[in-house]
Image (cartoon, rainbow, N blue to C red):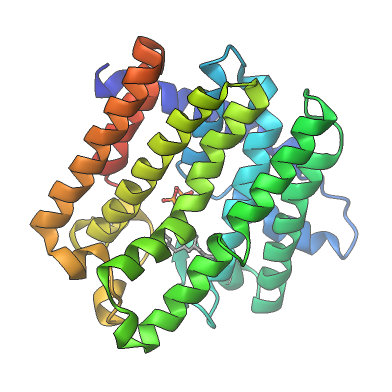
Amino acid sequence: MNTSVLQTELSNYTEQFNSRLPEFFPLNGRPEGRVVEAMKYSVMNGGKRLRPFLVYQTGRLFDKNFEDTLRIAVSLECLHSYSLIHDDLPAMDNDDLRRGKPTCHKAFDEATAILAGDGLLTYAFELLSDGKIPASADIQIKLVSLLANAAGAFNGMVAGQMLDLYAERSPELNTETMIKHIEEMKTGRLIRYACEAGAVFAGASEVETKALIDYSRKIGIAFQIADDLLDVEGEQSLVGKTLGKDKTQGKLTFVSLYGVDKAHQLAQTYIDEAQELINRQFGSRANILSALADFIINRQY
Ligand code: GRG
């Protein structure tokens, strides 16, 4: 499949997804509605919608459609947006720009941004558990449990973020094994959840689910390498966030570890492996997932 077919699929999906988002954020005009405004601002504030698209495309392998997968996709994007709001806070990455627009704490204020993150995190689980997902109770519970684990403090995104902050201050932790471990938790677990959730929702077999998980783990690492490369090679107006920060902050990244050329090669290797896996299991049905793997490392934003 050529890249432009994928670009069209992704932009059609994004358009449809964005047009449905407002209905998930009713504004009630009451003073506390300010937090919902901040939540809505952050979720509606652009974004590639890669995680929702992965949920949809995984579901589509098993004949699920946009509407079937929408609630799971919105829930995941809420959780992802919470992590970005909190990551941008002064106590964390302290950034003024996200998706090319003022970060939540700049557009509102710090306390509202903390609450908006809390609100989105909580809402993600409300959307999964309010009985409106067209699946059995067992599947709904499984989705809640998978997301909690992927986002959480034991082996998930919060654990990855903690280790990332800690490693910055502890040079002895700056090893290849450690960076892979950090990135697998911080970035990889939500990407993996996107594919696993689509598979669980759609009733994929164990073998099919495993192929999707293996694919997602590989594209997850490649995604992070691409993110590190964009920080040094990207165009700020396209990337939409402050670039060059990894170096200024002395962060250990795939680029600081391997250098630019080797980082590109490594990302390509992960993508080749992911494509081989997914093609072996699903053949041409997985053309879009396969093309998405290419997009992940060739993206400009
Ligand atoms: C604060 C609990 C907590 C976790 C933060 C997501 C994260 C963990 C930190 C964000 C910083 C960062 C650069 C992470 C690496 C890659 C990443 C998740 C980038 C943002 O995802 P995209 O590129 O963003 O999919 P869009 O805006 O397109 O949704």
